[in-house]
Image 1 (cartoon, rainbow, N blue to C red):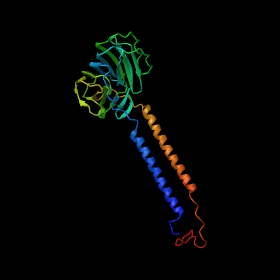
Image 2: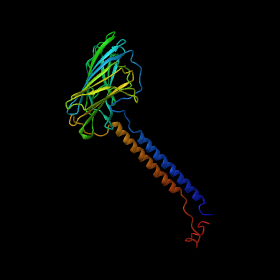
Image 3: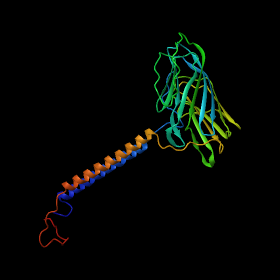
Image 4: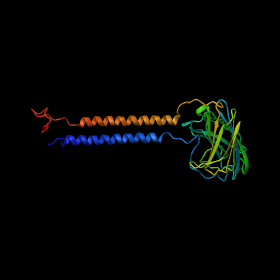
Length: 326
């Protein structure tokens, strides 16, 4: 029998091919996990597919005052003028992002203190919170609010009017503690999804004012559907910037951004990755460990199944010119 043609050689080649297949599958699995990542929409946005208008309701005007404190907190006051097209049994919802990408890192935005200062007679009011967003619900059947460390207690339920047609102005307050990020040269960056995409309410007109004690060096604004946002008006000033946009169709969003000069506001320190990122990292580590364990077991089984070399014939043990196995 010629060299390299025995059953042991063929089995060895088959084992090597199988090993390469397992290794290639392992590399592909790790690459897919790494590419998927924890994922998150940009700058506090909560991206969803556009939905239909909510029972004929619409936002006639959204007036927002944003104040950046020297300590790095971002305080927001909203006046939402609703144009209601039906009975209050059909609720109106306002969603405020609580998690997003800031400075290239996905993290909670430190949303807290969400409260309804004036419900315009559209009660009952419920404030519920998840890791992604806090939702304010106005009207509809009375529901018990979900307790949350980031949401202020909801207003006590009130009797719902039989018909809530016509304009109503609702006042909301909330605060962000981790919305700012650092830029080179000591500057500070703010990006805020003031009106998240995927909502069910169209908006006729938006006016927002952003103020900071140290002034606003630059400002920009984009509106529209995810991935196709159009520029909107942004005017920076010495102490504040003004943004105007509209109309926004149901499902469209509004993203505000501003650059503050050096020393205008402190940037919150990095508190590490948020829970979804940690879960993703643990999952990748577990997958890598499982793949390595499978490789080790496969190599051990292959070694146990490998036939032992047959004893060489006497007189030819060290002579490579002869077939040692006859």
